[in-house]
Image (cartoon, rainbow, N blue to C red):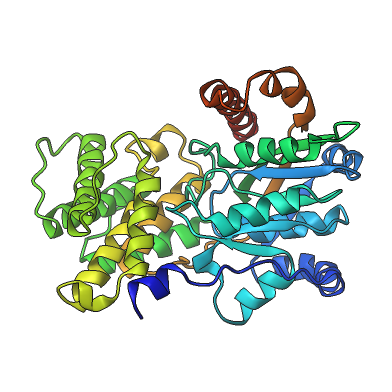
Length: 401
């Protein structure tokens, strides 16, 4: 396939089938419980908050700690009796499940570029009366249960643009809500057996001896993985004891390796995750023959997966709060790296607590702040967008804390 063919791959619009969606919603609590071993918990007070704004357009903005978050948001839609649209990474639409996702309201976005078709679709949805849209503003999984990565401002910017269009020529300005949603997972059953089994699998794969202290075993595995990666990419650490500096140096080295191979001009001011998505997009756009060999393409893509997997990790995460959730979040990262898998092995039944912050009526911001600046004054408008994005991020993080 040529560069043009792949880069212009078809946008996947939503094919929402209300009847089918309602049918799936009616059984999805059982599916999530039996298949994924996850139980959703939400207070009646929070359900009341969401039902109170049902007559209006709403953008739900949840944190994104793992690949099950989309399933949880779908079950939330069932709990409150609503139909949601979902912005989902293009790569997730595979096979029958991908087709089914379109039927329940999901549509694609290509990360790393300005996906004009996806943006256009989002604006169209947000101008529909009573539309409900889910956007994960972190832009990808953090893989940490109680840490929220910086929110991207794009979802808030699109909401303001939709308000501009709704207000144009209108006698009254409609209410339009942004809702910070916090998803926090906890393990329900005793977890020691799953913890020990995961450590043992990794130790066996890395030819490491076992010891009594579980945390020391975890650190030994992490140390070996870090050393292996430095060796693979020909990186010599300046200080073996400063793990955080080694992690930062490794991420910088891996990203430079990808960008140099693809002749991408580095943009240090852009978050690592955004730069990685651009690399992935270009890799998917290039034909394999344009690289030196197939192995180059595969290794570059593996490098981007590693960057995303370890993006939010830091030394001291487990030691600061040695909960089962932090242990398993770290083990999951290590399993992804060592065993080259997307979904690590099951580690026990979980409960996800859904917390709803106070809904934010965007109309108030639009009338008092945003609209007061001329549309050409992009700097002032962007400051408003950035501040609101930060406020929503803080609201989500507060519930995790």
